[in-house]
Image 1 (cartoon, one colour):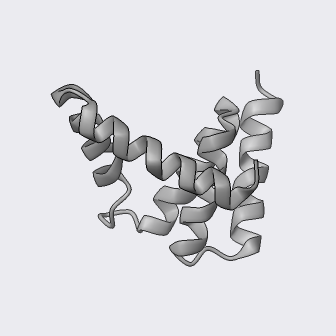
Image 2: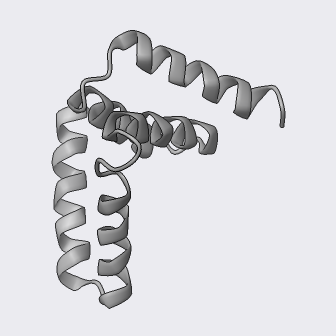
Length: 95
């Protein structure tokens, strides 16, 4: 599946889940959105952390999502590479 197709599919499915989901599902989606907002930690740093966690957990859809969000938050290629190097160390050398 091409990236643009994946994005459209993800948007369509998220919309369907939110429309048909119960209150707990809606709360989860709300929490997921709120934790990545600017706070004591900058939003860019939070997205880079999300990228590291997604990579360690090997969630391909999550990795793509967080790379996109990192770019939207202004992360440079080098910042993304460094975050992925952390994921490599955490997910590959310790476990």
